[in-house]
Amino acid sequence: MSTTRKPEAGATRGLQVLQPSGWPQPKGYSNGIMAEGRLVVTGGVVGWDVTGRFADGFVAQVRLALENIAAILAEGGARPEHLVRLTWYVVDMDEYVSNLKALGKVYRDVIGAHYPSMALVQVVRLVETSARVEIEATAVVPR
Image (tube, rainbow, N blue to C red; front, side, top):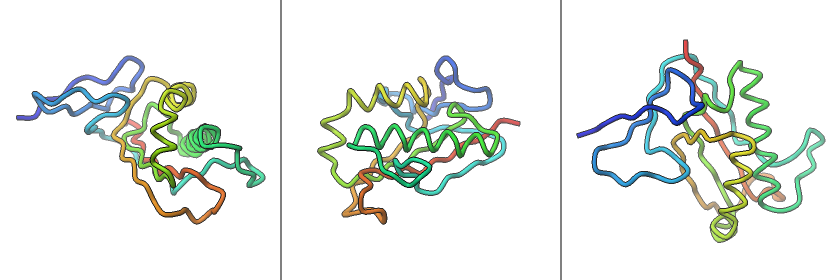
């Protein structure tokens, strides 16, 4: 049996977190989100600035990638709280895991306390050889 719960404080109307009954509560992500509205999708976004220069280090690249996602969302009339899914591609899972506390802070600084459905995948490499992380985002702007 599936249950739903209301989004966390600060989340946007029109998004509903899906949490199956009896499942452990996820930390830092949602198992699923149901939304109705206008879809905004990004490509794979990396942690570089407007000149194409990469930030130094994994956490700094994540911050820039999330800021870049927020900028793309804004172009489509969306905000971070409209995110329903993030897919993270990392070149080193250990680098991700060893930086969880710092990543959590960076995430909350840029996205806030909104935790969409997420997936994390380790890849052999990314197209941009200096990239440590690439993130795809999907948002739904409520009607």
